[in-house]
Amino acid sequence: MSIRVGFLGAGFIANVHASLLRSCEDVRWAGVYDTDRSRADAFAAKTGATVCGNEDEVLTGCDAVFICTWTSEHPRLVAMAAARGVAIFCEKPLATDLAGATHMAEVVRRAAVVNQVGLVLRFSPAFCWLRTLIADPASGRVMSVIFRDDQYIPLQGMYKSSWRGDVARAGAGTLLEHSIHDIDIIESLVGPIATVSGLSAEFHGIAGIEDAVNLSMSFANGAVGSLLSVWHDVLERESSRHVEVICENLWCSIETDDWWGPVRWQRTKEQGSLEGGALGEKVWAAQLAPVNPDQSFIDAVTGGRTAGPDFDNALRAHVVVDAAYRSAARGGVPVTVSSS
Image (tube, rainbow, N blue to C red; front, side, top):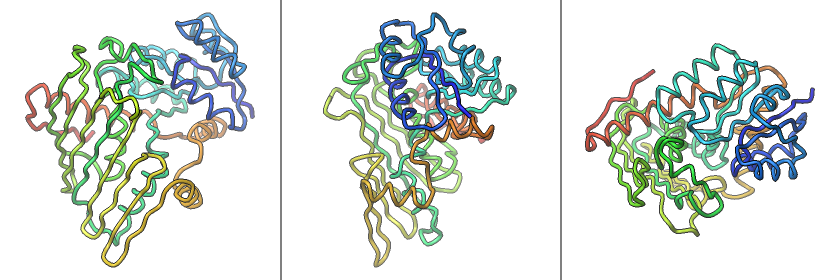
């Protein structure tokens, strides 16, 4: 079965998906639309997609759509796609606020369409192996997590994203737009966050676009942790994550690269390290993650089955982020995170 794939938005992340889809089976390029016609033309030249004059043309001619626009457009476009019964891959974050994300999850749930969200760290070999180490009963209970995420502010460099400096289109800064990835993967590794205390700053002077956030977290299972997320101007550091998790009988970390590691670990009288191709082969051989997350989505559309991470997973990350912003607005007062 051939799946006709359409694109709404033809910027940086759309081109990342296009690269992944080139190696996917059962994909046929349908329409692409972008408010910047030159970007749509460039995307079409690379892929063979047909440039469309509006969003309706794209949705009418596809079985699955990748929504890769600025965040404030996501709710409207998801509703349009769901009304047509089109399978939906939506980039993160879902919406500029929790209310919008909640409504989107309800719309997709009612439409019963296959859906997936671009929370891509769930497919990272490094994080998949870290999750396996933590889940091993020999590791004992998780005690703490320390997570640092830094990236040059994506208004420059390879991202060249002017809209991320516009609060009306982006909603907020580094926590919502970038580190919603981190919140999602932290809960995937450790478990539900119970309370959060947040502080934020705006060094670039863009109102409503925070570029430094520090969160202190407590987890329902008793663990504690911290997340530091920063948008700086060091262009040589495109995106970097450093993670340490300590369990009762395990220390483990991800260093240098959040996809290829190395992942290091230590227990009493045991230590190990995996990185690069060896890490990927280990993870894929154990079927801990698919090699290509976009192929996973296409397979779900072809088979009419559930994809993931889905809108409900993404909504949970929005619940935590909303609590963190409410805490930061009150000077770091701890806020209880809803369990729903």
